[in-house]
Amino acid sequence: MQISLLLQKFKQKYPERKVRQFIFTFYAVGIVGLALPATHVFFVYLIPLALLLSAFILLPFQEDDFSIKTGVLFTVIFVVSFTVEAIGVNTGKIFGQYFYENGLGVKCFGTPLIIGLNWALLVYLTASIFQSFRINKFFLVLFPSVLMVLYDVVLEQVAPKMQMWFWNAGRVPFRNYLVWFLMALIFHTLLVISGLKLKNPLSKIVFSAQFLFFLILMFIL
Image 1 (spheres, rainbow, N blue to C red):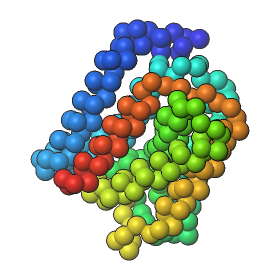
Image 2 (spheres, rainbow, N blue to C red):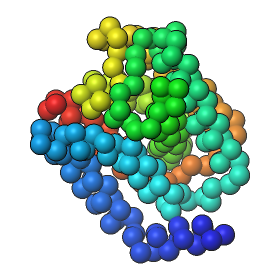
Image 3 (cartoon, rainbow, N blue to C red):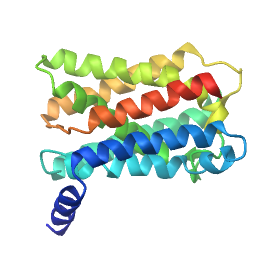
């Protein structure tokens, strides 16, 4: 109850218009900071904080209160995605041969803890975006999954330059994208089956800001 009141007060103090402006300003500053050699390393270490901020800034604007079912499902997504990533990076038998650098913060089993949040956040954003359209359940699974893969295609181009992760072969194997797609399909299928309503007016803004952030950096780094 207290959390709900705090979120409501935040929303009253910082309306959607101001938050939208902040999001784009925040990511624009990040682009400049990462592009400049003098500040690049400093901004690399801010990446985990940026992901956390992107996740928490969405909470007050979720139209339906977060239920226990919502919490459980996204906890499952966090745990499963982190586990798969940990197995993948330690065996090289899921995504391919790769290793994580220090750009994503604290690691456990050679895997940044924030990576589970990144999966949960992307699933939330893409699900919320397509739930705003009147489409059938099949496309509520397919379209967000495809969008997540497109996001990863861009992200993979800049991840090494931001000290996130590196591929041993120096290139991204096709099976990485295939596994991303399969995992996204599974997670979005769970959401559709659960019947969760994930309507958030900031989802498109946060996703667009992140996508443009990596897309621009892909050309300037």
